Length: 112
Length: 116
Image 1 (tube, rainbow over the protein chains, first blue to last red):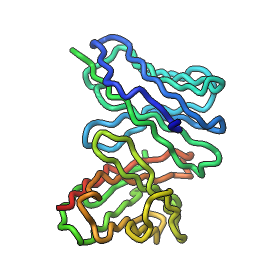
Image 2 (image 1 turned 90 degrees about the horizontal axis):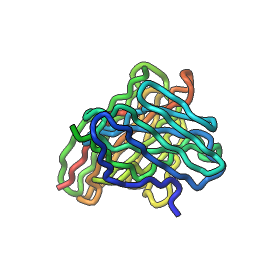
Image 3 (image 1 turned 90 degrees about the vertical axis):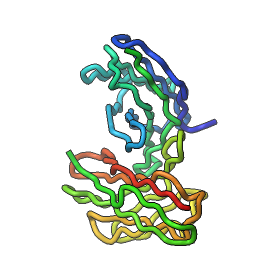
Image 4 (image 1 turned 180 degrees about the vertical axis):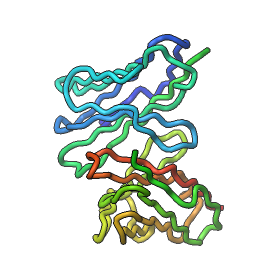
C-alpha cells in the first residue's frame, strides 16, 4: 500500500462547477496535510495546509480532514480554466523529520 | 513570502559528465533543504534531506556517491549529479524550510536535466 494515494484521474469538470480531489494516507501518525498545485513544467505551489479535523476554507478552496478515516480532500468552488493543473496531496508525520510524502497527483481539467 | 531559487533552470549535458545544481533561499535562512526528483507524469520523490553543516540524509535507493549534496551555508545547498547518464534525465526540485516563519516548505522553480 502506498503511503499517500490519490486518484490519478484525469478529472474533468465544467467551468463554474465544484471540483473534488481526494487523498488517503496510511500513517496514522501523520500530523500535517498539504495540497499543492503544479502546472506542467513548473514546481509545486502550496494551496492549503490543514492540521485539524474538519474543514478549512480559503477563498474558493476548502480542505477537509478526517483523521479517523485517514482521508483528506480539496474542494475547488467556481472552477476556472486556470485551475487546470495537477494537484498533489502531501503528508508530514512527526517521525518523518519534516519530510513530505507526496501522492501521485490528480490531473484536473476545467472545461470552458 | 519566502523565495527559493535554483540555478540553472535547465541543463543539457553529455553522458559521463557531472552537473551541479544550486538551490538558494533568497530572503531567509534555511537550515534544512530537501532535494526531489520528478520523472514525467510522476510525483515528486524525495532524494535527500540536506542540513546546514552536516552530511545529507539520503532516502533508500538513492546513491549518495552519485548524487553529492553540500549545504555549506544557511542559504545555499548544491546537488551534483556525478557521471550523469540518460536515465538521470529528470526534473530536479529543491525546497527549503523557513523555521522563522513556521515550518512550511518553499519550493524552488526546478532544474530540468537532460543527459544525452
